[in-house]
Image (cartoon, rainbow over all chains, first blue to last red; front, side, top):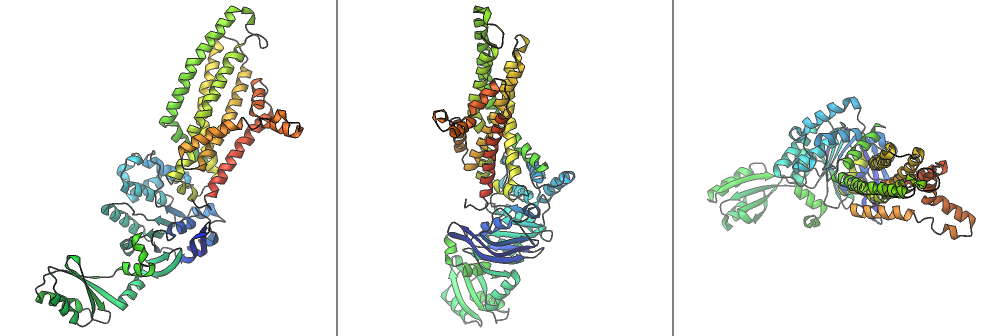
Amino acid sequence: MIELHKVTKKYGSRSAVEDLSFSVQKGEVVGFLGPNGAGKTTTMKMITGYMVPTAGEVKIDGKDIFEEPLKTKKKIGYLPEVPPIYSDMYVEKYLYYVAGLKDCPKEKMNSLVNSVIEKVGLQEVRHRLIQNISKGFKQRTGLAQALISEPEILILDEPTVGLDPNQILEIRNLISQLRGQHTIILSTHILSEVQATCDRIIIIKEGKMVAQESLASLREKQSQSRRCISVRVKQTSEVLEQTLKQLNGIEDIKSSQNNILSLLVNADTDTNINEQVAKVIIEKGAGLLELSESFSLEDVFLKLTGDNTKDN
Amino acid sequence: MRQFFNQFKKDFKQIFFSPVFFLMAGLCSSIWSFVFPRQIFEFARKVGVSPLAQGGMDGGANIYGTVFISQLSLTHLLLLFIVPIFTMRLIAEEKKLRTFDLLLTAPITSTKIVLGKFLAAYAVVLILVTVSFLYPVSTMWFTEFNMGLLVSAYVSIALLMGIYTAIGLFSSSLSTSIMLSVFLGIMFSVSLHFISLGGQFSNNSIYSSIAEYLSISTHLDGFFRGNIASSSVLFFFIIAGFFLFMTQRIIESSRWRAK
């Protein structure tokens, strides 16, 4: 569906994207990860036909987007980082305008607008000015704009940035609902988002690809080496940590603030280890509050993109 | 065609229903309504003093040469500053609010975008020109004048406004600041009148004839005398077309330029 072949984009002498190649199959949901400034937005702009790559080619459905821009662009819905909305227009009027801009057939106009309003849940604000609606609704209007022409491909650039947790959840649910109907590329630096919605992730750093894997295989890889159990107790003690360390399979213990202990477990250990850990804690009277096993994409991400990601 | 019309409709509404338009239209009509009757009275007084000067196309005072011409130049002067205000947001704000992304990723050519935006602003400007036209026309119930001459003069103003609108659109595409866009629009429009300056002092006949062709006032003079020359009409189309072409190139340039 989408193919990038050795795509390079240079801004002057600085290259934002270098020699990037990947392809996305029909119906796939791909998470596009990377620290800020890694070239995510630039890549997306090239896929959507906004920008011409300095070298390499971008193919949509086997056709080069810069050779047949009008045909291929019809297949793409794009939600940029900042939703492209006119604050002095009414939500409904705006959607009619975008439908016209995207050359949707005239007789289908009404049904397209109505169905997209329903799909993203804009019914209550459809007759309001865009500048007066909340940020969550603005983001939905942006999403509606991308969906209006019923495109095969959806490119979403950080769709949940700047929203409150409720709105994030709503947008995320929306995206999950779209799965199956569209091929989706989703850029983000929120890792839980990727975990929640994507089949596969592509991680880039400084314009180069550092990993491209399905979430399942990544999870497997991670758990093959070691697992991480995190425990919250009422009070920690030296004795507790010592005893836990003696358990078979525990490799390392890190204690952090709020009485949280992170236990690194050797992958060969059977799952009983959770039970044993719980037992020890209760026996020592430390007061077990929480015990969870986590697969964290963050570890993978940090490992791949280096430590400098944190200060961005 | 539908895409073009869609773009036209959106931008026309955005300018026409903005407070800026009503403010400017109000300003224009109050100035015209203040000045025009006074010109008429002044003309009537002069005619009353020397009745021989009345009527007639040539010689003496005629209403076209005094009252109407001053209405025309007043219209021109006002619109020189107002047209860039109408066009200021067209592209600069799209860039600033990042709605430009939508335009560039939509299946529409930038030529259609430019033409849609240009004609939208031009239509709004023509509304003001029409309002200005109504003042002289309203005197037809109690005076005699050559209607053809008046229409010809107004056609030239309308064509000149096409150039100003194209210049305004071009200045709007240059930056993300609407203030800068207004300023540049006025600067370019004004300097257009000085392009031909110095032509008449040159000994080189080719240079001076080029300068004469590029001089707006040469072409306006023809129209004001009721002489609609196709070369003059072509001149206005070429200049406006040039600025529209430049605008289209600037929009396309954002496909390869770093922000």
